Length: 218
Image (cartoon, rainbow, N blue to C red; front, side, top):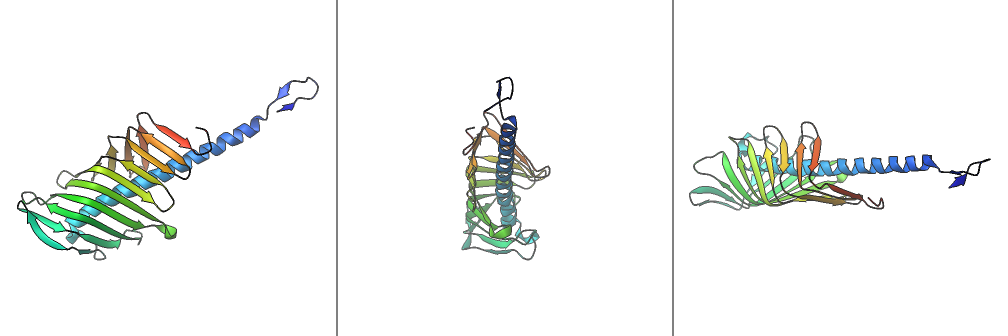
């Protein structure tokens, strides 16, 4: 704090506060953008994984599928230890595995997967890892349900966690109706629910939203 010349009144350096506020706003914006990217990439990578497992004949030739064995569980076709390798639209390689993929014998457009994990290499030698304990996809309805826990990690230390998620495959929308938590080098966040729209590139957090930036005191 400095003193104004002539009248002795205190004078505050408001410009310093404005600079600090602007920096914090930029940090918030960067943090939210990175979390949105982690959630979007992780969730939609899992979607692509499910579709590739179940309808691999419709996928590009650069995809390769292997598995430990084929069998049946209660008359449903089961693929044990399936493994999918390939590249995304930008040429980034990925590897996707699951303990089991089971296709409904009465409806070949419905299937379930167990312990799904996907690793995707990104630009500049970075990577993202996404995991889901269980999933159920209905291609006729264009719906996907992930349950039992969803975890997304990146090499830069960002991670997101949610117990369940519902996905509209036709609209490219992901909704989490339970709590979502995230953290990274810049801070942490949590909310009661989330909504991610890949078409508009928007992530909406709802219900008791809390975000803390390390060192910001907020």
